[in-house]
Each structure stands twice: as structure tokens, then as C-alpha cells.
Length: 146
Image 1 (spheres, rainbow, N blue to C red):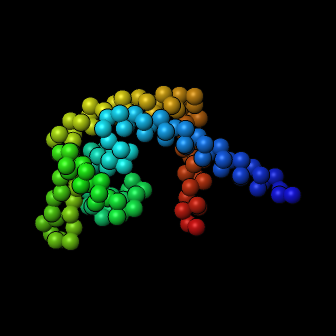
Image 2 (image 1 turned 90 degrees about the vertical axis):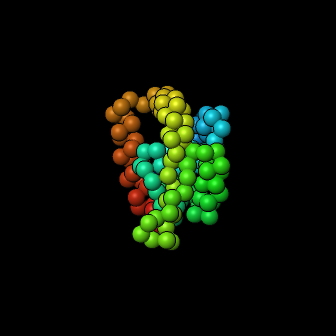
């Protein structure tokens, strides 16, 4: 029989996975209602909040395989929401840059996105949210070393 610590760890993993899945499904449905897939939204949101980004680094920042970034950037470029900019100092580097149309679009949809996430998290008090953030960081840091 497994010890109590192992049982608790398994239970935590299941509860954490189910909570993430439930929350993510709600958020993704709202994102898709705005004509974007979750990855497109993540790239657009990154560029809006962090500015121009080298294409090679976007995947790591939004947790997406680098091979998929080109496809996502192509789709957003076709929609007129971002453009590629060549780096003047290094021809190997291309930046993704949000367009004015992209800025206007994200400014229109982001406030509702933020409100929805706040509503999904509303079962926790502000101090519980802070504690959850701290605990999840504590959990994730060593996991990243495996």
C-alpha cells in the first residue's frame, strides 16, 4: 500500500488537472467566440503587453512548440493583426509586431477576457489567490528541473 504522502500527491495532481481543464475550457470558448484560437490570442496578447518579440522566442513565452509559431503568426498576419519586422542588426532575427488593427482588437476584447477570468477565480479571496500563486510557483519551480 502506498504511503499517505503519495496518495495526497496523486489527489493534488488530479484536482489541479481538473481545475485547470475546467477553467481553460471556459476561457478558450470565449476566446474562440472572438474569432481567434487560444494560441493566436496568446501571441497577440504577448505582443500587446510586452511589445515586439523575436519570432524564435515567442514559443517559449507562451508555451508552444517553435514550429507552430510560424503557422500562428501567418494566420494573425493574414488577419491584419500583426506583421513581421526584420531585425536591422541581425538578418537571422525576425520580430513579430502587433499592428494598429491588432491593438484595437485586443483593447476591445481584453477587458471582457480579464473580467471572465476574474469571475472564474471569484471563489477565492484575494489572500487565497496570493497563497495559490505562491504555492503553485513553489510546486512548478522544482518540476521544471526534471
